[in-house]
Amino acid sequence: MAKQYAREYEEHSSYGSAVRLVERAELPVGVILDLGCGRSPVAARLTEMGFTYVGGDIDLDALDDVRGRGFEAHELDLFVPSAELVARLESLLAGRPLAAVLALDVIEHLVDPVAVLGALHDIVSAHPGAELVVSIPNVTHVDIGAKLLAGRWDMTDTGLLDDTHLQFFSGPRLDGMLAGTGWAEVDADDVELPISDQCFPVDLPGLRRGAPLHDVFAWARRSAGPGGETYQFVRRLRPVEPIAVLVPNAGDIARVVDEDRPLASVVVVVAAGDRGRLGAILADLAGQTEQSFEVVVVAASGTVDHAELEQIHHRLWRDRGSPGPEIARREVPPSLEVLVAVLQEARGRYVCVLGGGARVSGDWLAGLREMVAIGPSRLVQMPMSTASPVDLGFWEAKSFEEAGTGAESCDPTNWDLFHDGPMGSCALAALALPAEAVQAAGLTPDPADGDLAWPAFALRVALMAGTVTSPTGSVLVAEDDLIDLDPRADELLDRLDGIPLVGRTGTVGRFGLIRSRLDHHRRAETELRSALTYKDHELTALIHHTAELGREVDRLNADVARLNASLTRRLLGPLVRRVRQQLRG
Image (cartoon, rainbow, N blue to C red):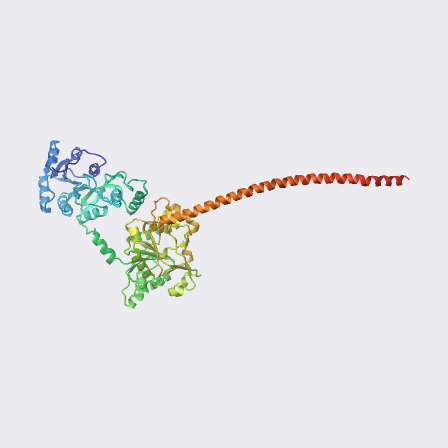
């Protein structure tokens, strides 16, 4: 006996979503073919809406159930060649107009879903106005990912990992397959379910909200894109011309990363008045010992024209016998939003943003290559020096070595939050950003962070991917391009306080060291407070003693005054009497 699924209709389910999509559509009056209908929870609702319901399934017991409730249902095998399937569906229509085809929780059960979707495209296209509604479980639900971290892949009787599923879909795989078979999305009503049927065992560490492991994983999943809590994709589609879409498997991904992608996408930001510096930085790039990179020039319209760029390209590379990298041009004013778009579209494995007159040494990208080999996916810091010329144009006519004469080296920024030293200064030009942090993990600078957008973004990347500092290669930047993070550390950390943290190996030891130092400082503070309290008592006693001495002095002064008065009377009295006697005599 075939597996029996529920026939009860529920609003918060793929059946409820499908019915709402049909209600919102302006479908022609006609038949709705429900493929793989099972016991058909939607038959009554669709009939009430004025459609002719026709179900089809391979499960004879389910078909008897549907017919017993007064609905038309036929035996239908989807595991047949496409032409035979089209003919069978047309026979079920029996000349009646088609309004829509439903394939609810069907595609994932097919050996060849592409062939079936192609056959459905043929029959729906033959009926003007007809559309297709599909529902498909989402294998990238956060619960499945959290359980994979625990080494669990639990097939169940029904649900996300139904044990009869032959296909598993992410959003991109579904979109690619639909576009490739000629379907364009018209409407969506996905089923959102934060806690899915895969949320078991109930006490599995990291599976429930509030657990640190879950919060870190859920944050990473949310950053990567929508769908982390989507239980089923439910879409309404219309037939269009098929579009060739690459939906790579694991082998294709490895080939693209290892063979087709350049090492770096170098984004050169040209502000107004910086045209001369464009030639200088391109000269630095032409002198690189590592030439696996592309260049994207971002400049306001009219700042750099195509002919000028071609001339520079020809002079720097082709005169050296090299075709040089591809140089793309974006004629838009440089802004955070524009740079984010460039990051999202970059072909290179890493993205380096150079602006404000930054210069790079000839082994800059070679140093990046070495670091990528050691720590792929990590945020790479390149050695950085700063100079303060009166006019940045002073650098234009000089080589990197000449421009860097007298420059001061900067200590690398400490992106580790679990340390008790200074964070230091950072400059965007000294960072090589892993492109997948943006394109796959979904991290981007946040405009709400203002002038701390890039440091906050770099910290988020560092928290997720880690960091590595290159000992070779160098970047020369202007002092004005440095951001001193120490005075603004609290402000920067406040921007990151809303995300969970994951620490790399050794974090516990560093945290323990910080805690020991804090304990030492607390003990020293306690001892100092005790000493201060003792001194305070001594000072109070001394004040009291001084006051008493003051009172004693006052008493002595009074005694002296009385003694003086008495002596005055005793010494002067006889003298005064003699004088008076002499005067009378």
